[in-house]
Amino acid sequence: MDWKSLTFSYTKTNTMLCTYFRNGEWTPVESRTDDTIALSAFAGALHYSIECFEGLKAFMGKDGKVRLFRPEENAKRLRRSAKFLGIEAPSVEMFVQMCEQIVKENLDFLPPYESRASLYLRPTLIGCNPQLGVASSSESMFMVLCSPVGAYTGGNLEPVNCVIARNYDRAAPNGTGSHKVGGNYACSLCSLNIAHEQGYKAVLYLNPSTRDTIDEFNSSNFFAIKGNSYITPLSDTILPSITNKSLEEAARYLGMTVERRPVPVEELSTFEEVGECGTAVVITPVSHLDDKPTLESDEVTRYTYVEEGCGPKSLKLYNFITSIQYGEIEDPFGWTVEVKM
Ligand code: PLP
Ligand code: COI
Image (cartoon, rainbow, N blue to C red; front, top):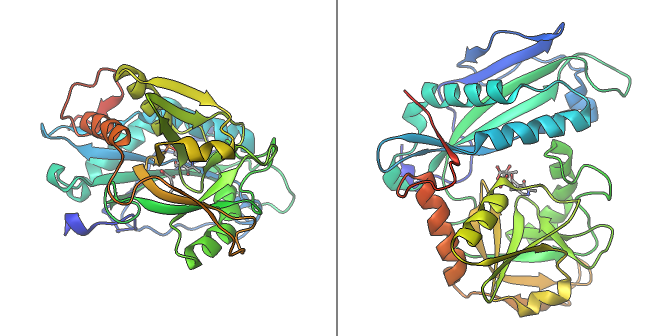
């Protein structure tokens, strides 16, 4: 494999793992070489979006050890999403055990340390029994899939241009915004497609209740740097990002102040650095952010942060967190879980 040219796209690996919750228990975990699944055409996942998922990465360390980053956090978040959908989810222990198993079965797809790439894991939970009425599914199917991945957009730390979607929302107040359900991503596609046509890499959504505070990007959380502060939105309609939570802890550890609070759009002009953060994007600096009355409008207010490269504080945080992930420095927080061979 040409590890250096990996992007965030699907590569078929050796196996996927699969188990069903039926009659009050999980079936034994099956390891399948085929990446297709047989499903009733009436499965709740297909009609009523009874689906939630997670994303986490396995890293080949400098010391030859393989590490997962905070898998218990993903397990807990999946259980929270599943509770919202009213379907059965695996225990934290079962989730982590299956993540370790998929890594071991696909070690030849784990990018080498030098590549700065990783093996992305996609635990996916769907309602799978045939049903017609709108109701939570009584049977669940839990899969753990994987694919080697590189940078989400462009190269690592390559800045992206983004646009605010003032006339599109991704989440409803009191709705699914804080859960990692597939439907949220479907809701983002129309605005994302318009933004892509205009050459933007990502869309920034506003809080759907206030309409003048920042929520998050289509596939990542928002953070900004002002002086010595790491600032990130407080909102009920954003995904509680595990990367963002880790960056907050990292920022404090590195002597920065952390502010999690509502972030008004007007404050954008006062930030020194702005970035996306998440498992897939890691830290991706934002070069400039365009604010338009509507996504379709030609009228633009532009906030510029970097022309190229990454701002110094974002870079410091990126280096710190990736050094822990790749086993280059001690993990002072106990975030990583070693996959023992
Ligand atoms: N926000 C959205 C909408 C996402 O899809 C993701 C990706 O998982 C994140 C934020 C970042 O979350 P995490 O850091 O847990 O990957
Ligand atoms: C992740 O960062 O793991 C995500 O789930 C983002 C994704 C939708 C590409």
